[in-house]
Length: 431
Image (cartoon, rainbow, N blue to C red; front, top):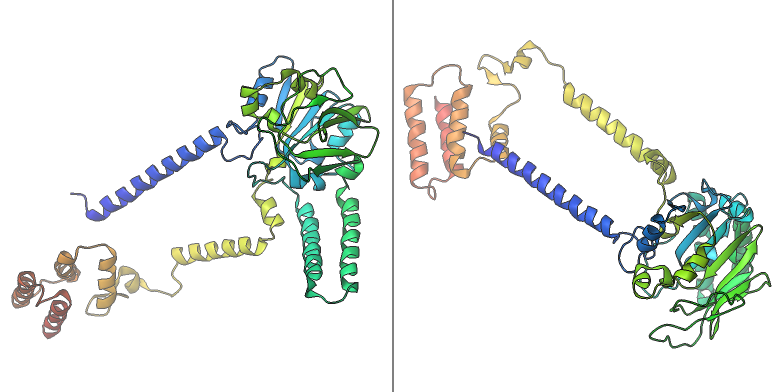
Protein backbone atom coordinates (compact mmCIF):
# COMPACT_ATOMS: atom_id res chain seq x y z
CA UNK A 1 0.00 0.00 0.00
CA UNK A 2 1.36 3.41 -1.00
CA UNK A 3 2.08 5.64 1.97
CA UNK A 4 0.41 9.01 2.36
CA UNK A 5 3.73 10.82 2.03
CA UNK A 6 4.33 9.42 -1.47
CA UNK A 7 0.77 10.27 -2.49
CA UNK A 8 1.34 13.85 -1.30
CA UNK A 9 4.55 14.18 -3.29
CA UNK A 10 2.89 12.67 -6.34
CA UNK A 11 0.04 15.18 -6.06
CA UNK A 12 2.43 18.10 -5.72
CA UNK A 13 4.45 17.01 -8.76
CA UNK A 14 1.27 16.52 -10.81
CA UNK A 15 -0.01 19.95 -9.75
CA UNK A 16 3.32 21.57 -10.69
CA UNK A 17 3.18 19.93 -14.13
CA UNK A 18 -0.40 21.10 -14.72
CA UNK A 19 0.40 24.67 -13.64
CA UNK A 20 3.55 24.76 -15.80
CA UNK A 21 1.71 23.50 -18.87
CA UNK A 22 -1.11 25.99 -18.29
CA UNK A 23 1.33 28.86 -17.86
CA UNK A 24 3.19 27.94 -21.05
CA UNK A 25 -0.08 27.66 -22.96
CA UNK A 26 -1.21 31.12 -21.84
CA UNK A 27 2.23 32.60 -22.55
CA UNK A 28 2.36 30.95 -25.97
CA UNK A 29 -1.09 32.28 -26.82
CA UNK A 30 -0.11 35.81 -25.79
CA UNK A 31 3.03 35.64 -27.91
CA UNK A 32 1.07 34.21 -30.84
CA UNK A 33 -1.46 37.03 -30.63
CA UNK A 34 1.27 39.61 -30.05
CA UNK A 35 -0.30 41.00 -26.88
CA UNK A 36 3.07 41.20 -25.14
CA UNK A 37 4.46 43.48 -27.86
CA UNK A 38 3.91 47.24 -28.19
CA UNK A 39 1.67 48.96 -30.72
CA UNK A 40 2.88 48.94 -34.33
CA UNK A 41 5.28 46.05 -33.70
CA UNK A 42 5.42 43.53 -36.55
CA UNK A 43 5.06 40.70 -34.01
CA UNK A 44 1.64 41.98 -32.97
CA UNK A 45 -1.46 40.66 -34.78
CA UNK A 46 -4.20 42.70 -33.07
CA UNK A 47 -5.67 45.87 -34.71
CA UNK A 48 -2.74 48.11 -33.65
CA UNK A 49 0.02 45.74 -34.74
CA UNK A 50 1.76 45.65 -38.13
CA UNK A 51 2.00 41.89 -38.62
CA UNK A 52 -0.41 42.14 -41.57
CA UNK A 53 1.93 44.52 -43.40
CA UNK A 54 4.89 42.26 -42.60
CA UNK A 55 3.19 39.07 -43.76
CA UNK A 56 1.77 40.69 -46.89
CA UNK A 57 5.24 41.80 -47.99
CA UNK A 58 6.68 38.39 -47.09
CA UNK A 59 4.26 36.73 -49.51
CA UNK A 60 5.53 38.79 -52.48
CA UNK A 61 8.11 37.34 -54.81
CA UNK A 62 11.39 39.18 -55.18
CA UNK A 63 11.18 40.94 -51.79
CA UNK A 64 13.19 39.91 -48.74
CA UNK A 65 11.48 40.85 -45.46
CA UNK A 66 13.32 40.60 -42.12
CA UNK A 67 12.98 41.84 -38.55
CA UNK A 68 15.83 43.66 -36.86
CA UNK A 69 16.60 43.34 -33.15
CA UNK A 70 20.20 44.58 -33.36
CA UNK A 71 21.20 48.13 -32.34
CA UNK A 72 20.34 50.60 -35.10
CA UNK A 73 23.92 51.86 -35.28
CA UNK A 74 25.26 48.37 -36.10
CA UNK A 75 22.66 46.65 -38.31
CA UNK A 76 24.19 43.97 -40.54
CA UNK A 77 23.31 43.18 -44.14
CA UNK A 78 22.23 46.64 -45.32
CA UNK A 79 22.80 47.71 -48.92
CA UNK A 80 21.53 50.24 -51.44
CA UNK A 81 18.37 48.19 -52.10
CA UNK A 82 17.34 48.19 -48.42
CA UNK A 83 14.47 50.10 -46.83
CA UNK A 84 14.53 50.38 -43.03
CA UNK A 85 11.11 50.82 -41.42
CA UNK A 86 10.88 52.45 -37.99
CA UNK A 87 7.12 52.11 -37.59
CA UNK A 88 5.48 53.58 -34.49
CA UNK A 89 8.41 55.42 -32.91
CA UNK A 90 7.08 56.85 -29.61
CA UNK A 91 6.60 60.61 -29.88
CA UNK A 92 8.63 61.32 -26.72
CA UNK A 93 11.58 59.38 -28.17
CA UNK A 94 11.72 61.36 -31.42
CA UNK A 95 13.86 64.13 -29.94
CA UNK A 96 16.40 61.62 -28.62
CA UNK A 97 16.84 59.65 -31.85
CA UNK A 98 20.49 60.07 -32.81
CA UNK A 99 22.86 59.28 -35.66
CA UNK A 100 26.22 58.02 -34.42
CA UNK A 101 29.30 58.82 -36.45
CA UNK A 102 29.84 55.15 -37.32
CA UNK A 103 26.17 54.24 -37.78
CA UNK A 104 25.85 51.48 -40.37
CA UNK A 105 22.24 52.51 -40.97
CA UNK A 106 23.04 56.08 -42.03
CA UNK A 107 26.04 54.85 -43.97
CA UNK A 108 23.72 52.58 -45.96
CA UNK A 109 21.25 55.46 -46.48
CA UNK A 110 24.02 57.66 -47.85
CA UNK A 111 24.89 54.86 -50.28
CA UNK A 112 21.32 54.52 -51.56
CA UNK A 113 19.13 52.86 -48.90
CA UNK A 114 15.81 54.33 -47.75
CA UNK A 115 14.84 55.17 -44.16
CA UNK A 116 11.17 55.49 -43.18
CA UNK A 117 10.18 56.77 -39.73
CA UNK A 118 6.54 56.94 -38.64
CA UNK A 119 5.58 58.51 -35.32
CA UNK A 120 3.26 57.02 -32.73
CA UNK A 121 1.45 60.17 -31.51
CA UNK A 122 0.36 58.53 -28.27
CA UNK A 123 -3.37 58.36 -28.96
CA UNK A 124 -3.40 54.97 -27.20
CA UNK A 125 -1.37 54.04 -24.08
CA UNK A 126 2.17 52.99 -24.91
CA UNK A 127 4.49 51.64 -22.21
CA UNK A 128 7.39 50.42 -24.36
CA UNK A 129 10.38 52.59 -25.19
CA UNK A 130 13.24 52.09 -27.64
CA UNK A 131 16.00 49.85 -26.35
CA UNK A 132 19.16 51.65 -25.26
CA UNK A 133 22.74 50.63 -24.67
CA UNK A 134 24.28 50.88 -21.21
CA UNK A 135 26.29 53.91 -22.38
CA UNK A 136 23.11 55.65 -23.54
CA UNK A 137 21.38 54.83 -20.25
CA UNK A 138 24.21 56.49 -18.31
CA UNK A 139 24.06 59.67 -20.41
CA UNK A 140 20.26 59.96 -20.21
CA UNK A 141 20.34 59.37 -16.45
CA UNK A 142 22.81 62.22 -16.02
CA UNK A 143 20.59 64.48 -18.11
CA UNK A 144 17.51 63.48 -16.13
CA UNK A 145 19.18 64.42 -12.83
CA UNK A 146 20.25 67.81 -14.22
CA UNK A 147 16.72 68.54 -15.43
CA UNK A 148 15.24 67.58 -12.06
CA UNK A 149 17.64 69.94 -10.30
CA UNK A 150 16.73 72.74 -12.71
CA UNK A 151 13.00 72.19 -12.17
CA UNK A 152 13.45 72.31 -8.39
CA UNK A 153 15.37 75.57 -8.78
CA UNK A 154 12.64 77.06 -10.97
CA UNK A 155 10.02 76.13 -8.40
CA UNK A 156 11.70 78.31 -5.81
CA UNK A 157 13.61 75.75 -3.79
CA UNK A 158 16.68 77.89 -4.47
CA UNK A 159 16.43 81.61 -3.87
CA UNK A 160 19.23 82.90 -6.11
CA UNK A 161 19.19 83.28 -9.89
CA UNK A 162 22.83 82.41 -10.52
CA UNK A 163 22.55 78.73 -9.52
CA UNK A 164 19.59 78.35 -11.92
CA UNK A 165 21.65 79.79 -14.77
CA UNK A 166 24.43 77.43 -13.81
CA UNK A 167 22.06 74.46 -14.08
CA UNK A 168 21.00 75.53 -17.59
CA UNK A 169 24.65 75.91 -18.62
CA UNK A 170 25.43 72.46 -17.21
CA UNK A 171 22.56 70.91 -19.17
CA UNK A 172 23.65 72.57 -22.41
CA UNK A 173 27.19 71.40 -21.80
CA UNK A 174 25.96 67.88 -21.16
CA UNK A 175 23.93 67.96 -24.40
CA UNK A 176 27.08 68.85 -26.33
CA UNK A 177 28.97 66.03 -24.64
CA UNK A 178 26.14 63.63 -25.50
CA UNK A 179 26.31 64.74 -29.14
CA UNK A 180 30.02 63.91 -29.19
CA UNK A 181 29.57 60.55 -27.46
CA UNK A 182 26.27 59.32 -28.93
CA UNK A 183 26.00 61.26 -32.18
CA UNK A 184 23.97 64.25 -33.29
CA UNK A 185 20.23 64.33 -32.71
CA UNK A 186 18.26 63.50 -35.81
CA UNK A 187 16.21 66.69 -35.55
CA UNK A 188 19.43 68.74 -35.84
CA UNK A 189 21.07 66.54 -38.46
CA UNK A 190 18.00 66.52 -40.71
CA UNK A 191 16.91 70.10 -39.88
CA UNK A 192 13.33 69.33 -38.99
CA UNK A 193 11.12 69.66 -35.92
CA UNK A 194 7.87 67.97 -34.92
CA UNK A 195 5.31 70.15 -33.18
CA UNK A 196 1.79 69.58 -31.92
CA UNK A 197 -1.20 71.74 -32.80
CA UNK A 198 -1.98 74.03 -29.89
CA UNK A 199 -5.75 73.99 -30.25
CA UNK A 200 -7.47 71.44 -32.43
CA UNK A 201 -10.52 69.25 -32.75
CA UNK A 202 -9.70 65.88 -34.25
CA UNK A 203 -12.24 64.89 -36.95
CA UNK A 204 -14.00 61.61 -36.29
CA UNK A 205 -12.71 60.19 -39.58
CA UNK A 206 -9.32 61.85 -39.24
CA UNK A 207 -7.87 64.80 -41.15
CA UNK A 208 -8.17 64.66 -44.92
CA UNK A 209 -4.79 64.95 -46.61
CA UNK A 210 -3.83 66.72 -49.81
CA UNK A 211 -0.81 66.02 -51.97
CA UNK A 212 2.16 68.32 -51.57
CA UNK A 213 4.90 68.84 -54.14
CA UNK A 214 4.59 65.25 -55.36
CA UNK A 215 1.26 65.25 -57.19
CA UNK A 216 1.70 61.65 -58.39
CA UNK A 217 0.19 60.33 -55.14
CA UNK A 218 -3.50 60.55 -55.83
CA UNK A 219 -4.58 58.26 -52.98
CA UNK A 220 -3.66 59.22 -49.42
CA UNK A 221 -4.65 57.67 -46.06
CA UNK A 222 -6.70 59.31 -43.31
CA UNK A 223 -4.63 61.08 -40.66
CA UNK A 224 -5.25 60.98 -36.90
CA UNK A 225 -2.07 62.53 -35.52
CA UNK A 226 -2.13 66.11 -34.26
CA UNK A 227 1.60 66.55 -34.95
CA UNK A 228 2.97 68.54 -37.90
CA UNK A 229 6.51 68.82 -39.26
CA UNK A 230 8.42 72.10 -39.36
CA UNK A 231 11.19 71.65 -41.97
CA UNK A 232 14.08 74.11 -41.63
CA UNK A 233 15.75 73.09 -44.87
CA UNK A 234 14.74 73.35 -48.51
CA UNK A 235 15.96 69.78 -48.95
CA UNK A 236 12.63 68.54 -47.65
CA UNK A 237 9.76 67.89 -50.05
CA UNK A 238 6.22 67.94 -48.71
CA UNK A 239 4.53 64.72 -49.81
CA UNK A 240 1.24 65.15 -47.94
CA UNK A 241 -0.19 67.84 -45.75
CA UNK A 242 -3.26 68.48 -43.69
CA UNK A 243 -4.86 71.90 -43.48
CA UNK A 244 -2.52 72.78 -40.61
CA UNK A 245 0.83 71.73 -42.10
CA UNK A 246 3.02 68.94 -43.49
CA UNK A 247 2.50 65.39 -42.16
CA UNK A 248 4.60 63.36 -44.64
CA UNK A 249 7.92 64.72 -45.88
CA UNK A 250 10.86 63.30 -47.85
CA UNK A 251 14.42 64.35 -48.61
CA UNK A 252 17.53 63.03 -50.26
CA UNK A 253 20.34 61.98 -47.94
CA UNK A 254 23.45 61.25 -49.93
CA UNK A 255 22.43 58.73 -52.59
CA UNK A 256 19.50 57.51 -50.48
CA UNK A 257 16.35 59.04 -49.04
CA UNK A 258 14.57 59.61 -45.73
CA UNK A 259 10.78 59.72 -45.23
CA UNK A 260 9.08 61.04 -42.08
CA UNK A 261 5.41 60.58 -41.24
CA UNK A 262 3.73 62.06 -38.15
CA UNK A 263 1.25 59.16 -37.82
CA UNK A 264 1.47 55.36 -37.92
CA UNK A 265 -2.15 54.24 -38.07
CA UNK A 266 -2.07 53.78 -41.85
CA UNK A 267 0.35 50.79 -41.51
CA UNK A 268 -1.64 49.07 -38.74
CA UNK A 269 -3.62 45.86 -39.19
CA UNK A 270 -6.86 47.77 -38.61
CA UNK A 271 -6.08 50.34 -41.30
CA UNK A 272 -5.08 47.65 -43.80
CA UNK A 273 -8.42 45.94 -43.15
CA UNK A 274 -10.70 48.99 -43.19
CA UNK A 275 -9.01 51.55 -45.44
CA UNK A 276 -5.94 50.14 -47.23
CA UNK A 277 -3.97 52.55 -49.42
CA UNK A 278 -1.73 50.27 -51.44
CA UNK A 279 -0.27 52.95 -53.71
CA UNK A 280 0.85 55.06 -50.74
CA UNK A 281 2.45 52.05 -49.01
CA UNK A 282 4.19 51.13 -52.27
CA UNK A 283 5.60 54.65 -52.55
CA UNK A 284 6.69 54.47 -48.91
CA UNK A 285 8.87 51.43 -49.65
CA UNK A 286 10.29 52.85 -52.87
CA UNK A 287 11.68 50.30 -55.29
CA UNK A 288 13.70 48.44 -52.66
CA UNK A 289 13.97 44.66 -52.59
CA UNK A 290 14.95 44.24 -48.92
CA UNK A 291 12.46 45.46 -46.29
CA UNK A 292 13.67 45.63 -42.69
CA UNK A 293 11.14 46.03 -39.86
CA UNK A 294 13.06 47.47 -36.92
CA UNK A 295 11.87 46.22 -33.51
CA UNK A 296 14.46 47.94 -31.33
CA UNK A 297 12.32 51.10 -31.22
CA UNK A 298 9.70 48.96 -29.44
CA UNK A 299 12.14 47.75 -26.79
CA UNK A 300 13.13 44.45 -28.44
CA UNK A 301 16.86 43.81 -28.53
CA UNK A 302 19.29 40.92 -28.31
CA UNK A 303 20.29 40.44 -24.67
CA UNK A 304 23.78 39.17 -25.47
CA UNK A 305 23.67 36.36 -22.91
CA UNK A 306 23.72 36.10 -19.14
CA UNK A 307 27.32 37.29 -18.69
CA UNK A 308 26.59 40.49 -20.63
CA UNK A 309 23.63 41.20 -18.35
CA UNK A 310 25.82 40.54 -15.29
CA UNK A 311 28.39 43.03 -16.53
CA UNK A 312 25.76 45.58 -17.50
CA UNK A 313 24.00 45.62 -14.12
CA UNK A 314 27.23 45.12 -12.13
CA UNK A 315 26.05 42.07 -10.19
CA UNK A 316 29.40 40.29 -10.16
CA UNK A 317 29.36 40.18 -6.34
CA UNK A 318 25.96 38.50 -6.20
CA UNK A 319 27.00 35.99 -8.87
CA UNK A 320 30.24 35.00 -7.13
CA UNK A 321 28.52 35.01 -3.73
CA UNK A 322 25.86 32.58 -4.95
CA UNK A 323 28.58 30.40 -6.51
CA UNK A 324 30.47 30.26 -3.19
CA UNK A 325 27.25 29.52 -1.27
CA UNK A 326 26.34 26.62 -3.57
CA UNK A 327 29.87 25.21 -3.31
CA UNK A 328 29.81 25.36 0.51
CA UNK A 329 26.31 23.84 0.63
CA UNK A 330 27.39 20.95 -1.62
CA UNK A 331 30.49 20.35 0.52
CA UNK A 332 28.48 20.47 3.75
CA UNK A 333 25.92 18.03 2.34
CA UNK A 334 28.49 15.52 1.14
CA UNK A 335 30.76 15.62 4.19
CA UNK A 336 29.94 16.37 7.86
CA UNK A 337 31.92 19.20 9.40
CA UNK A 338 32.43 17.33 12.72
CA UNK A 339 34.90 14.42 12.76
CA UNK A 340 33.40 10.98 13.27
CA UNK A 341 34.42 7.41 14.03
CA UNK A 342 33.22 3.91 13.16
CA UNK A 343 30.80 3.81 16.11
CA UNK A 344 29.20 7.10 15.15
CA UNK A 345 29.05 6.11 11.47
CA UNK A 346 27.23 2.90 12.43
CA UNK A 347 24.61 4.99 14.17
CA UNK A 348 25.19 3.83 17.78
CA UNK A 349 27.21 5.07 20.72
CA UNK A 350 27.57 3.86 24.26
CA UNK A 351 26.33 0.71 25.91
CA UNK A 352 22.66 1.72 25.79
CA UNK A 353 22.82 1.57 21.99
CA UNK A 354 21.17 4.99 21.68
CA UNK A 355 21.04 6.53 18.21
CA UNK A 356 23.75 9.17 17.86
CA UNK A 357 22.51 12.73 17.81
CA UNK A 358 18.86 11.77 18.42
CA UNK A 359 16.90 12.77 21.51
CA UNK A 360 13.23 12.45 22.37
CA UNK A 361 12.41 16.02 21.28
CA UNK A 362 14.32 15.83 18.00
CA UNK A 363 12.73 12.47 17.21
CA UNK A 364 9.28 13.94 17.79
CA UNK A 365 10.02 16.86 15.49
CA UNK A 366 11.17 14.48 12.77
CA UNK A 367 7.94 12.50 13.00
CA UNK A 368 5.83 15.64 12.87
CA UNK A 369 7.62 16.67 9.70
CA UNK A 370 6.48 13.44 8.07
CA UNK A 371 2.87 14.69 8.20
CA UNK A 372 1.60 11.93 10.51
CA UNK A 373 -2.07 12.19 11.36
CA UNK A 374 -2.63 13.42 14.96
CA UNK A 375 -4.62 10.30 15.86
CA UNK A 376 -1.70 8.06 14.82
CA UNK A 377 1.07 10.13 16.35
CA UNK A 378 1.44 8.33 19.72
CA UNK A 379 1.11 4.79 18.29
CA UNK A 380 3.73 5.73 15.70
CA UNK A 381 6.05 6.95 18.48
CA UNK A 382 5.67 3.60 20.28
CA UNK A 383 6.33 1.64 17.09
CA UNK A 384 9.50 3.60 16.34
CA UNK A 385 10.65 3.09 19.95
CA UNK A 386 10.11 -0.68 19.68
CA UNK A 387 12.03 -0.83 16.40
CA UNK A 388 14.95 0.99 18.01
CA UNK A 389 15.27 -1.63 20.77
CA UNK A 390 17.73 -4.44 20.19
CA UNK A 391 15.93 -6.68 22.73
CA UNK A 392 12.28 -7.45 23.43
CA UNK A 393 10.72 -5.05 25.98
CA UNK A 394 9.43 -6.63 29.25
CA UNK A 395 5.85 -7.88 29.11
CA UNK A 396 4.79 -5.62 32.01
CA UNK A 397 6.13 -2.57 30.17
CA UNK A 398 4.24 -3.47 26.99
CA UNK A 399 0.98 -3.92 28.92
CA UNK A 400 1.37 -0.55 30.65
CA UNK A 401 2.09 1.17 27.32
CA UNK A 402 -0.92 -0.49 25.70
CA UNK A 403 -3.10 0.56 28.65
CA UNK A 404 -2.01 4.21 28.31
CA UNK A 405 -2.70 4.17 24.55
CA UNK A 406 -6.18 2.68 25.12
CA UNK A 407 -7.01 5.41 27.68
CA UNK A 408 -5.89 7.99 25.12
CA UNK A 409 -8.08 6.45 22.42
CA UNK A 410 -11.19 6.28 24.66
CA UNK A 411 -11.03 9.83 25.98
CA UNK A 412 -8.71 12.12 24.02
CA UNK A 413 -10.07 15.22 25.74
CA UNK A 414 -9.02 14.13 29.24
CA UNK A 415 -6.01 12.07 28.12
CA UNK A 416 -4.69 14.35 25.40
CA UNK A 417 -1.62 13.54 23.33
CA UNK A 418 0.78 15.70 25.35
CA UNK A 419 -0.18 14.32 28.79
CA UNK A 420 -0.22 10.75 27.47
CA UNK A 421 3.20 11.30 25.94
CA UNK A 422 4.56 12.43 29.32
CA UNK A 423 3.04 9.32 31.01
CA UNK A 424 4.69 7.10 28.38
CA UNK A 425 8.10 8.68 28.96
CA UNK A 426 7.72 8.30 32.76
CA UNK A 427 6.81 4.65 32.22
CA UNK A 428 9.94 4.08 30.13
CA UNK A 429 12.14 5.75 32.75
CA UNK A 430 10.78 3.46 35.53
CA UNK A 431 11.59 0.36 33.54
